[in-house]
Length: 474
Image (cartoon, rainbow, N blue to C red; front, side):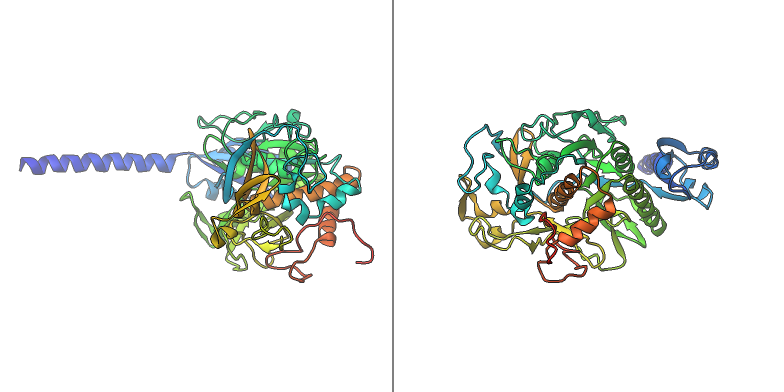
């Protein structure tokens, strides 16, 4: 009997603790995006409605018709006026590339260039992506991105890297990501961690042609570093990204590069990889919020480009979307790659990368992203390129800068900055300003069509981007 009484007491205590924990979880503040009927303002009536419904404004994005709000009331979305749309803020994983190697070697000093490139940047010959998008043809005509400003919305850019220092606008560097204590993670010019995704992305866009390391697609473009992914927490969220888009557009970015994303998201509702669940209405409204932000940027002359994601998913299935790449006003990018380029530099550079998302109506353009498929062919075979001997599959990755040196990586995260770099070339050639409509038109007009489909291909979209000048005979 005594044991039964003790067991009953313990069960009662456990139940009480569980009830308290459940209640606390239910009352934990959650962030929401309140979407106004107007894309350019949030009215005082809306602000009053938010306050009356128990919401606390965290980020004022009213110029885009958005407000980021916190509330402990799970009924907050329903309590807002039905004329307003409300979406819960969702988390987005830091987009570590599908594959990464490095740092493979320390920062390169000025040394004679490799024999094949006729250039004095020692690792230039490793950049098959430069060849794939015909960047050299643009360079030979003086189109190197001068005058273009590209915002890299990511987890940080090493502004002190010798390959990037000439082009990074450290004066425009800022952060919207939170740290582990709930404050804003400060932007720092020299991220101190092993592999920095943002630095790799920035190098693909605009590593300087300075006799050091490698060269970006647009080596005279400038980089605006905007942190929207938390290095401390290991993820970002929609509110930080939307705020970063606003900042970039307001501070003169010609291009926004977002090598990040979330999906596949079921438009009928479901749960994401964090275990956060959402309804069909949530997804619809979140898509609307990103579209508001992209249109805001477009109207200020900013072309917005985003990665399609690395899930190998066919988004031709109408039940799924990927954000932010599927939002209105954002160009979605899939990834291409060679297989065995280290063995044969004349091999096809435009094969679909097996991990890349695709789908009719979802992809706008494709670009070099890299792959590891040659590893399956012969993982032991070695190749030598630019004086470096490595397993042959390594050379099918995309080579770029990282803090403290250089590394290879692969993913749609690497494809997206190739498109941003080509766009920067066009913008620079136009004198430093070019409307997003004209940028997209140029990308379409100049794109190559690897499978001959001149429509909107499920994988290549309107084509693999190309920096070549328009030939009136085409």
